Image (tube, rainbow, N blue to C red; front, side, top):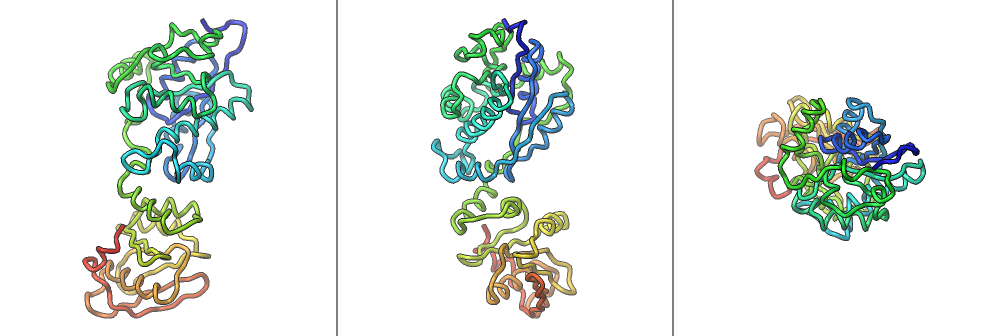
Length: 331
């Protein structure tokens, strides 16, 4: 059973979902002091984790890890899932970073809300074992919701955790977690679906295109992948065109006027559009025609498009390119 003579401290990975919450509560009900750590990139937000920490009174550390994450994402040893989601290597990386935090701050072990068999590819027993071995913290990771179905860990053998008070959940059913949540009064938690843009087909296709055509990237370029239409104009340039008022605002918020080229149709309602990292004059003319084609400007008649490149502003008169003609360019 857990030690009564030592203030045991555990650091958990937190997604903000119900499993993360319950795993922390299982340990806290043993008198273990729990804290969370979560990681943030343009591909997944820490917002749900922040909310869970606030609602359940659990301290949380949020770390942005994009440069480190990109190194893994470009060449994950275990490969990708259906899209560009490197789930096993992603989890291993997060446990490695959490383990470094554990050592630096004197926590006794790591934990997570993973449930054996809940996800057939990334949370089967072999995958969980792969993550542990490749994290660099083999034996230090407790999974409170499935621990009694998994090999015993160092914290359990050392008496830091009472194994008999851990759970033996497995499989994809959410019923045991929902019953436990009701028993413990946990009522506010997000649905388990979604959260990682790397699992989305459209986003993954755009990300592959970005990696194929560039060697360096700004953070904003990864956020932009989630908004608008993306059209590959040539090897060096692509155009992003807003599809709605909401998307126009999101794109506008991400424009870096120092490097991006922006396009705005004059005299007609139209989208906010940009070529990331700027472009030459022929590409600007092509982009302006495409932008006008997605506006309310009359088909077949010249339209004026304002082109903003840093401090330079130019008006181009172009014949709009129809959306049908643009289809081969769409990512």
